[in-house]
Length: 388
Image (cartoon, rainbow, N blue to C red; front, side, top):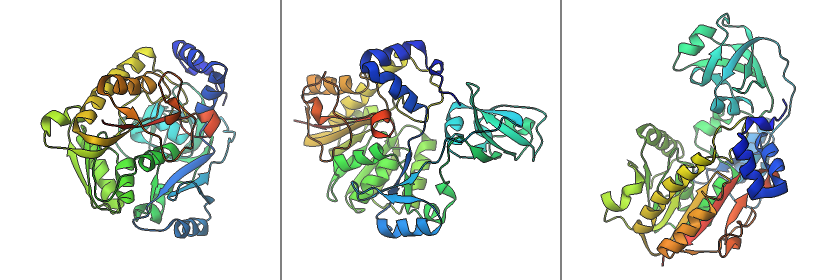
């Protein structure tokens, strides 16, 4: 499948060119492919890394140690493979397409369109909304039912453009020994370094990757208050908390932009803020529809969370701010806002795996940016701030 830059809005391409110069086309091309390494966090509350590696390898899974983080391993991503354009057509939505692209099965909620003549057992090809063929598989329900069903397996994928083993089908997943998490997402909790005797707040916590990672680093001691405004997402967070054997998390359905108002006695030693963002760094990204207005809207939203984070932090407390996007507005300019409006200061991060931030913030070398074409990761941003 060709990586057609027209899958990105022209104004977004122009924006990337302005900010990143000659690297922009390399970055965009990398965004349209999965990383070559698929990272997994080892749940050290339940198992040691070397034991988990042995168990996975015994199942024939090519699992590798990542020595720079003591709870990180990765799998090799296979591909790209050619997909025969043979079969009736099913079109998946954007998010389902990006999962199917690396070998996931297609479930009914992710189906946009389906050939109404499809019958269970038919050979089908799955296309993304932009028209590229991403997988071939066997229909597990009729085309008409795919469009109507709110749940259930629509297509069992036999061949995808790229392939990673489905970890959620493993016993190790059900036992809570692993959590699928990108390398920079894992790094955020290590940078914040929550301690067993601390009060920690995760402001946008669902589905719980960073929440449960912090609990792991805190050895299930101290307390983590986890907030998300979506009841469904909080239920998913609690499922992960139970699966991973986490004991020190209290979860709340709440809009954390107003924590300082609705929880006036809440004072945190550390806060983790991974706010809603434009997600321009997520990969594989088969196409993108967001533009500059979306970036600005996200920036304004993020500042509201940041204000609340500042209010609930103790003096001398630390705030880890992270996003899975590449824009300046949602990253460096949000940090500049925190420095100029709240007097917060950038703190050196204890582990550096990415590149430094852009030179529009003083001490930009204390920021971390991950670029897909440089680091073989999603596009990502991490900052560590201290409250005066």
